[in-house]
Length: 315
Image 1 (tube, rainbow, N blue to C red):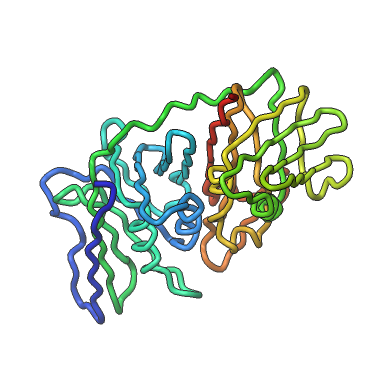
Image 2: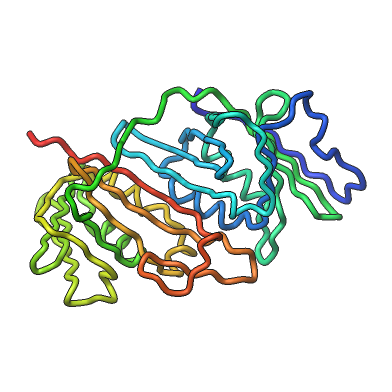
């Protein structure tokens, strides 16, 4: 099934708890510790566009990749590199993959978040019955355990093979909050949105059609603070279903929008749309700013989110 189950137990003033070792004769594929759950929740929330959403998790020596998709037209990936973890002990051969409920994963991680306090969380896979095991670590007063039932992935993620449309990438970078606001303004029930790139003068036009037309233009020379970067050597125009385009920004948390880093939008061969966001996973009490246009950076504490949207077919 596409859902899942979570079993949770909290223990107040626990004097002794199991360490997680001995939960099976074989060594686990992964044992890791997250010291800032808030940032991981923010990153995963970006790709949670509906309530009952399955995800495929892939483990490797480089980190964890969480993939979600819908209707073969929309796919999102969250890249959680090893640098984001306080500890990352990978012991598997190959790259294990399993499915789970994205909503359950986010809800369980949220239980470990307390405003103003960062409680490290240990993650282990697999448990005795192939569960994903979560547990609070380092707290002398309480311990929270969570088990999320996993499943064999139903399908292999569709193969997108993103390639640039020409010799020069067709791309622009815009403040994340502005991109979200613009896409929200373009809402027409059941409609599609046209994205039009103009190399001269350098600009991007978003056009929605319904009972009337609405256009939003980003002009590079007019406001470089708004359109942070622009690269295009050919005129391109493709249409995308609004509900898929909206999913690329609608769930970006307000905390991420407030930091106002840039989101990068690229059109590839055949009109494949790629939208990239960056989410800070800095430890509580520290600040980490990073954007596609440069500036103060701490790349090791950034989660990368990528959306891929297929264009509508021409009639």
